[in-house]
Image (cartoon, rainbow, N blue to C red):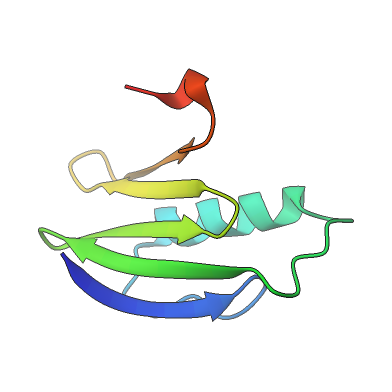
Length: 82
C-alpha cells in the first residue's frame, strides 16, 4: 500500500484519481450538507495501483478498474461487512 495524500472535505481531489471515484467523493460530500466537516479529511492510498479513499467518518471508496465504478461502504456500518 502506498500513501497518496490527504485533503479537506470540499477540497480538490488529486488529479490521478479516476472520474468514478471523484464523482463518488462529490456525491458523499453533497450528503453532508448541514454537518460540520471543517475538521474532516479524505485520505488517499493506493493498493496494487488502485485508489482507496477514506473519509474521517468511516466512509471508504474503492475503485473497480475492470468495471470503472466506485464502490462505497462505511467501515463502521455492520451492513457493509463482506
